[in-house]
Image (cartoon, rainbow over all chains, first blue to last red; front, side):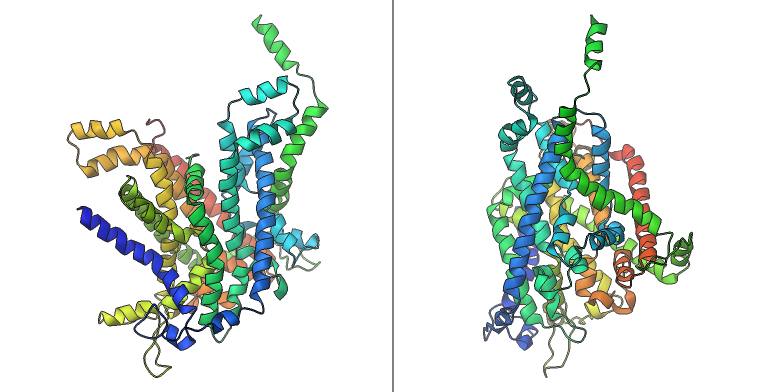
Length: 266
Length: 315
């Protein structure tokens, strides 16, 4: 029974890792060798020309991705943590009603608001700019929810004691509560990073100028109407995967915590 | 004395300072919420009754967009494809997630490795994943002299089976996309369920053991009720994501003008995008409203149905 279990687990693990192996291996192969039968992992003639084809545009795409991802993640952390604080640590009229609206907005599919969002962004004069992606990503219902849940578990006594000492809310927030929520902030930062690093839909809609493209958008450069250039595409995919992979290996526990914590609401 | 206390609490003076403080915390998220979520949602509904195409001259046309949608066979086929994709991915993602969660919930040699590897695809860009699977599922061709193609067809041929057209085949393209989606996402639900399984009270299992219950009996009477709130949450999330799927269709079946061979992967979310790129904003909005309405109805039905099987008070 135990052996059977291991055999099954190992077979599934191979299936899970196979596509990554194919990407890594193919990115060093010539176009014809990628599709040779039988498939071999180690290239017969390892080449770097797939990566060389990326050197004109991809440093810029990578830089754009880093910039957009970093800024949007920071903005999300600010809006989510201040929002979480006002929904957990301060009493006010209408608090629960507005929070319910936030929670309900998690159900809205992004396509359902695409057209008006586009009109708003265009009227703000931000079409075809990174600012459009940042603004559209600034609000996060999930992140606000996640951090709020965590703040609710911090005893009220901290706030009460600080208020008696005459501390103002922003001081309590910045000096006392925020440092205590560090684990969930890291979790949220990792999830934001992953989301914006990988996001395809928003840049596809809002970015036209080639020099403003992010990595996921740039990866489709090699798919034309007539032909798909697999080699460079594999190399580009590999480059985009490596940073998330490193973060995953370092911060695996925060990923796991983030998934579990999001489920707490039940 | 009791009345005096309530009176004091009720007489809390209106404080500008407090209001400014609250607003300073609330506005960063609230502005984003109103401008980019709430207003667009309402606006979508309004636009869906117009023939807006981006120009200054547009008018309200009543239900015309909706009538056009529901009287078009294409629209029904998009709905049908969406439903197939959603139902199959939800069933398999949840079932596999639960199966491997149960298998990997206890600590044993290598369990961390397997959990990590199964969850791993979930962190990758769907574009990168789509590209990888396109390579793996490439149809066989004779172009370079010798037969060549993706690794999956190579595997089928080595087993003496017929190779398949996969993403280029009308009957197989959606199936490949469904497979990719299951591959990438079941690990998420696995992690979700592992967290919840660890909170199921072990004494309930011991009690079931004493009653002589087999593993299936224990699974259905202790495990499922014990994690039912998270199971319910997982199913809800999977359904909503199922309706939103867009990236795979775009990347794997033909880009902006795609939608698969004979439109076989043209889900509703993709058609909204297509209509959007053709500046048919009014019609795209009507489709978006229909999408929202379907999700809303399903959520309400689920909320009602959950009372029958979701248990919240098992400790």
